[in-house]
Image 1 (cartoon, one colour):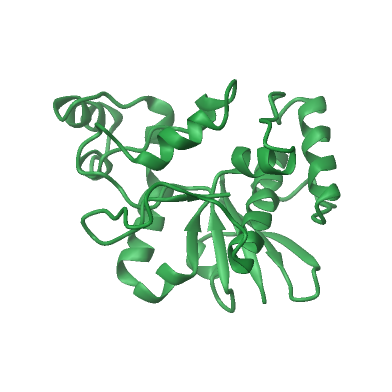
Image 2 (image 1 turned 90 degrees about the vertical axis):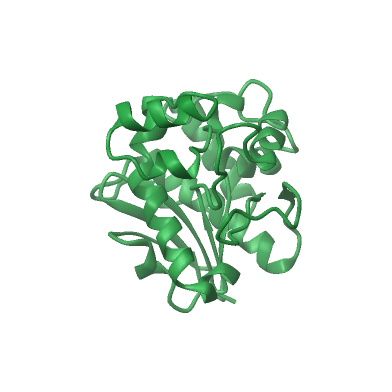
Length: 224
């Protein structure tokens, strides 16, 4: 069984693909669709399934924050679908605020990647059985005995701590440089690749109700 993890980066997506023999292949692709061929599971660090209003929001996000004390801010609030259609932060913030809550600049920067995932799954129903939403900090917490890794991954100590966790769980990351990707993007892709392995084996944990769906039938769950 071949699985992979994906994390957005400056030039596209970092993909960590785990072959049937356990070997890891890490590379950057421009489009997420380019990484889906031949995969049983692809775990993606990007929201899947969007609410029509910003409140009360997706249940899975609240559950994720509760599992990450001291690291809850790593779970970004997902925009509502009407805001995602906006092309400027001012428009998106105003639209979201009208519906109940404003939208920060950091989330707006993720809009292109969110739209890409959303369009891919709305237009290709077969991929809905392949692509799952994951979260790196939940993945690392699971590897760390359920405790969030509080050190920042961009610091030397935080980076080393996460590398050790990945290696301990059978995902040694031998790559720390790729054109167009930061090294923490690589870490996150490997972490959610482990989540993909857990999903494939039936051992992953799902956040949010099993039947949670948005207006297009996309699931609103986070897996780790």
